[in-house]
Amino acid sequence: MENFVFNAYTEMYFGKGQIKNLPKILEAYGKKVLMVYGGGSIKKNGIYDTAKELLKDFQIFELGGVEPNPRIETVRKGVEICKNENIDVVLAIGGGSTIDCSKVIAGGAFYDGDSWDIVKDGGLIGEVLPIVTVLTLAATGSEMNGNAVISNMALNEKLGTGSRRFIPKASVCDPEYTYGLPAIQTAAGTADIMSHIFESYFKKEEGAYVQDKFAEGLLKTCIKYCPIALKEPDNYEARANLMWASSMALNGLLGSGKPGAWSCHPIEHELSAFYDITHGVGLAIVTPRWMRYILSEKTVDKFVDFGKNVWGFENNNDKYKLANMAIDALEEFFKSCGIPMTLSEIGIGSEYIEEMAAKAVKNGALEYAYVPLDKEDVKKILTDCL
Ligand code: NZQ
Ligand code: ZN
Image 1 (tube, helix red, strand yellow):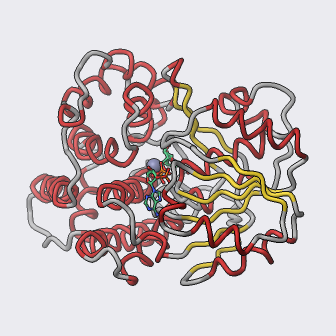
Image 2 (cartoon, protein in one colour; image 1 turned 135 degrees about the horizontal axis):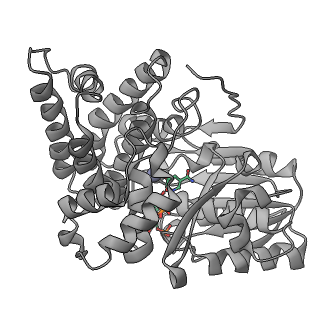
């Protein structure tokens, strides 16, 4: 296990009705609040009205309309409000897109230049306004980490940035808020959680047993509860377990002590940058193909662990058979959750594969991945996804 510093300092207000704590949480940071939200789901499900009522003693400025795959243009609008109105704290209500957008707004508020700079280079992030979130979708873990992913569609760029200062001060996580999610968002969110787990699980460092046992437990949680949430959208137990899994999957618990670049995320980010697709859907399509591509004498034992400890397959004498069974089971699982499992089903052809592969290798530093990948490798994986 490599050395690490672990400090997941977000105060998590988890459970039914926890939004009642919002005034107390925000009070610590000031009265001028920029409330950021997406395309309108919080108005339909009543969270908007609840928040406005609770915060009637605060001065609320609003930025709605944050896109899935949030755009730099929207960040710029938020930064302008922060600078003009001397905002004290940014309140994000929504999924990962809204939270990510809010983080870069909070950093842009103190940055003396265009906010795209701090997306391209996280090292430029200085002071950051305090960030508080109300989570409405179990997926990204953004509610408890310092990452943000922003798109610049004019350049076909979707880039991740981050800073410890982006870690939210507090997050309200009420599983009931996810009851009304469209089924595909529940499924895609789960695929995203699972992908975050895989990105840490499949790493060169092999001595991080604790992290891997956490990872296997979280994968089993997703496999158990996503089908229940899809069948019974208001099953509290299922929603609560998925929501807590989303936060645990990407708050440092699994990745600490396991350095190296990620594999599937950089590839998916290019699909989103070129075709504006749902992040979790892209990951579900790429992941089994990536797994089959990297299966070799060097990696097979890890896939055997995955098959035995996550899917409960019996050990047999054929390691490759077991590894392939595990990968097939994952693909079948995503399919059974209603996720389209080929790029052609979501309108993606081969036209940009060359360009996407080159960018994934560069933006994702894929030479440092679990199994290093070059442009030709990524092209083959993407072609397999068609
Ligand atoms: O915009 P609204 O109207 O709110 O609708 C959203 C959106 O259409 C809807 N939704 C969210 N909560 C809902 C709801 N609809 C009904 N009821 C609710 N309770 O769901 C749609 C998707 O929302 P979005 O926020 O885009 O989804 P998600 O949480 O999956 O976030 C995806 C973004 O996060 C980035 C992704 O790349 C993508 O841009 N990621 C962020 C990470 C991070 N910060 O650590 C890591 C991830 O790997 C990921 O890259
Ligand atoms: Zn993700």
